Picture 1 (cartoon, helix red, strand yellow):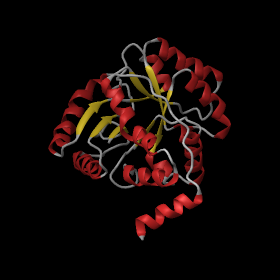
Picture 2 (picture 1 turned 60 degrees about the horizontal axis):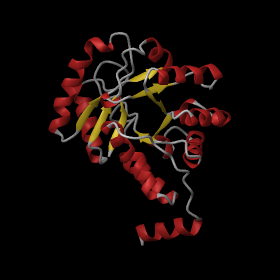
Picture 3 (picture 1 turned 90 degrees about the vertical axis):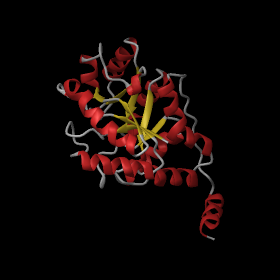
Length: 252
């Protein structure tokens, strides 16, 4: 699998504290079945000066563990607009990871996202299930109609951020407003990857297993290959009997 949102870089944000923690995170990722990671530190004004050295020091560790790293960054929307002539994209593609922190989707926010698209970027909104609420669904739909994409967090589906966020994550999935699932991992303990647990939960809950595979790997490959647009299918829940039979099959 491929993780497109991970705070693995050391000493640049609230991610890995040191190289030892970064190494442990990489080992955890490998156990989760993750073979490629796009490293996405939070943007700061000093990041570009130190980026290459910081990336290379963890790339060496990752290669020893059999994990390939790619360059990326997570931008607050306002920072992305200021830096729009020279953004760090995901794996050198046209895709840029954007965090919208306002907590609501005013019309001007949609216009600002459109401004980024006019600059030639494909916009992926990070963790909308944690930034917004049910009342924002119509605005999220408008963004989707603009060919803006959404990255949800694996941990959200297993309740790591609480019941309300778990429920909203599932609603976005069922409305076709999820194109990628990523970890947003920050450390080796409280903010891990949770890919296997989330993928198992989703396949136990929903009918469209092939679509779930797209959300964890195939769509991410398309970013790195620079190919195509992404369509998100609405996922449908298995009925109670199917879920029960699945449980019997696993534990019987």
